[in-house]
Image (cartoon, rainbow, N blue to C red; front, side, top):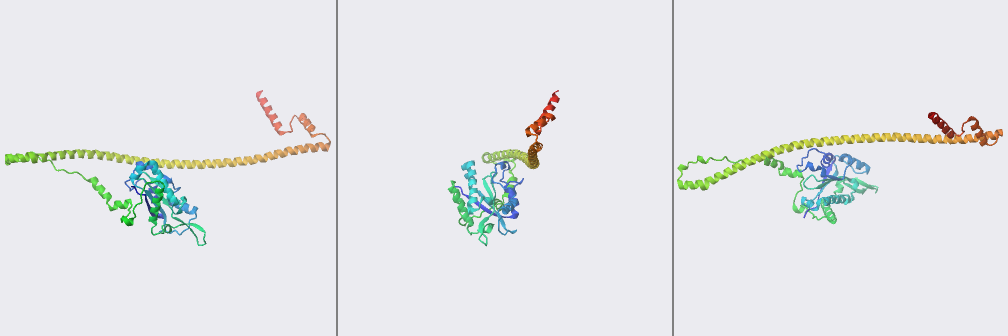
Length: 395
């Protein structure tokens, strides 16, 4: 049966830059030989950071007003590496694998009541032999200040305060995953197995991985030269005994050596083909890396152009919205002036009629319009003049 695996590592501020570039696959070359660059597209994020880990840390710290004294030597972030073995993921398939990591993510959110807001990044790597998740979070404890007010405090030592805190983590993770339907077993504690957990790089250093790989690469098959059977002086041998030795011992050995020699020639030819193939593959890899780098630069340029375009679009939109708002305000003012003018003219005409005993104001208006051939209503007058211009154009 497969194990439920969760490992924790603590980081200082100075570590965050390198961890960010590795986890988010921002490097061009990696010391880990297991990374298959052609499978980088399979990696995905359950939670992506808005910025680099350093800037993301500052953003979260400021947004949630995290308390706690942070020194240069302080551990300010932790990383869970969550996985199982290769056979487990092969057995459950791709969809269930996604469910495994999503369930593990929920466990971290709930464990010690951490909260999703304190997770900076959760990246699933599928470009290596065994799928695994790198989850970076801030070790925040929910406590109270001296006055008894609830606060969130960044304190790695308090988060992992208990002596058996890692054992508690392993127990809780195993229980959570099993309760959510994954057929796993709890790994034995290191106190029982006396096993030391090493990182990949530590393991490679201990086993001289790179030196051993280089020796195997440079190893050559050396076979003895084929002896010439004619060099044997048969005349000096007693005929029966020596012929028997020649036929039963020397000749079979000679045939075997000839066969080995031919095998050596075939191996050399095969190695030569592999060498040429390797050179082509290496050349292809360099070209591919250059294309990826060019694509990344082009992508950055496109993003910059889009950003500039959006900014200009925003500026233009804001400018015209301000102008439209000004025109609407001016139009409202003019409407009020016109309405006031109508009201004033009407009152003026009524006043004249009463002052001079002319009669009704409507009669006075009709006489004015008849004698002057003009409307006292400006809208009617404007329409009349526009019709006159249209008639002149038609004539």
